[in-house]
Image (cartoon, rainbow, N blue to C red; front, side, top):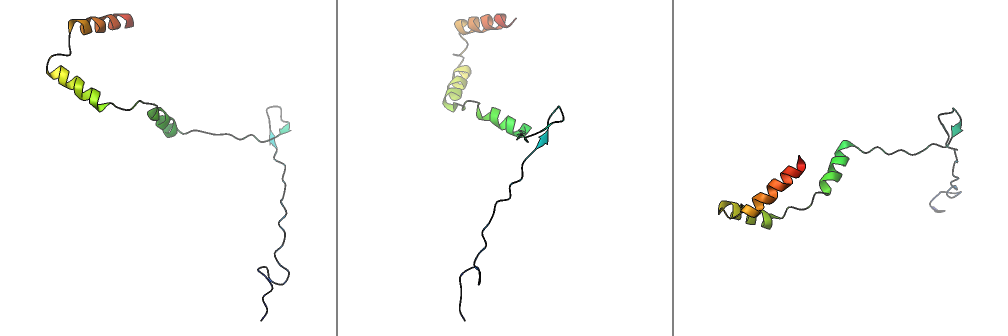
Length: 90
């Protein structure tokens, strides 16, 4: 038995690309090129927003909890700043 290559006796055939012109219809009814379109899901939009939220600083949260529990957080100066910011909102 004699083996004559991977494609048998004649060998593999050459692949020729088949070119098909892409055409679509625009608002005037004229034929024109087809345009690509991307649709982003609501889930993907939400994930993008979530990825932009800064990381939680647990050390800062723990320190603030400690200050609040010890009664050291609410100083007259901080209350004054909070009231001023609240008044700016209105």
